[in-house]
Length: 82
Image 1 (cartoon, rainbow, N blue to C red):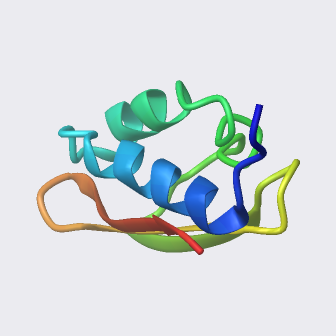
Image 2: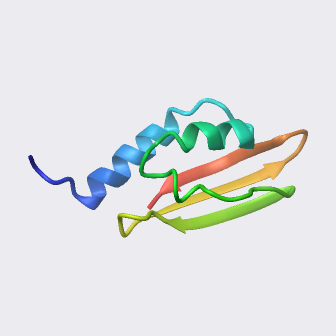
């Protein structure tokens, strides 16, 4: 079996993140945490009117970056793996 490159892993994870349709922070975190590679990186308490994380994925030398803000409700504004 051929080993995936970091570029392929990043692309796959970003594709999975792009498929998440919910925007509110709590529901988005529940869905994103179902992606096995992201579960540990997304553990924590996310609160406040706005915020940002940049967390290293446990098994790879790649990072997840996510930001959120509140207008009427807290929503995920952006998320990507780099």
